[in-house]
Length: 390
Image 1 (spheres, rainbow, N blue to C red):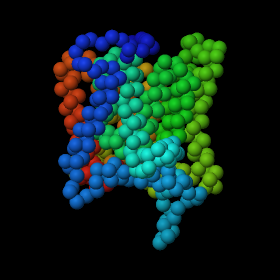
Image 2 (image 1 turned 120 degrees about the horizontal axis):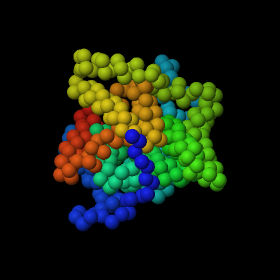
Image 3 (image 1 turned 120 degrees about the vertical axis):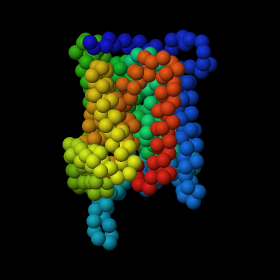
Image 4 (image 1 turned 135 degrees about the vertical axis):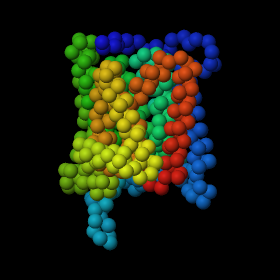
């Protein structure tokens, strides 16, 4: 049976006496506790002669985002001067995050700290919004459980890094929450921002359109509300194609963004063939525990997505989750980056979130604490001991 949808925001309901901090403040405290714990793991695990903690938080894609923020975008393809081979360049990175880095730099003198600070603030906002969204879907316990699961999932370390996942997650959660409350113009504006942050914003745009279509079909959106639903959907749907078209016009090749992605990072959509081959190799002749852990994470995420669909979660969340999950497993690329790309999928958190919300409080706390300990350690390991990009 499809669960009834009650759009009353219960997050402001009186809390039972007990823990002195409740509601959004407790969600923010959970977020801060996970960040402090993970920074502790990083400090403990980092080799003494290696990069500083700050340097690790700025590694890999962080350097690309800061380069775009400081130098702007190139006008054409980039080639290796030695062999003429095409390389990746800054055009592969969507503009919102580097634009914010550039803007915040006027207040924060260091581009590095501007980039890290945006991620920290965005991840905190995402945590509070996820609590609100989870509470609206069921109750406070689901809200808290989703915050722990989100903040401590295996590659949640990127929420502290100069990566765009924190900003994108905040925009996605805010947009879905707004769409759930049928504030479609707000959802569309947030979806526009998400689409200018990561290409997966297109999955969010389609979810907003589905939510708007549901409201229109039921008659809840009529008159001016109907126009807001249509306008919000259109705004969200336009953003990703707009950036891809701009890149094509700048380079003089309509498919330039895809060409740059393939040249720099081997990213092509192969309908999951590479992921299938990776899993077959890992389980047949696994080479190292990181490879095996990524394989298990992918399998667990797949099972979680299936369970979330079977429990008939809110349809737009299913649409967004399925499409964003398909984009992760359906593309070729570095296998060790896939857990990081799972961070904003959200649908993978739903079954465990509901299980924790239904469990006895002590059982839920123990299970979530154990999950957090592993997830926070795992992310720290991947940027201190693991030598490859995430």
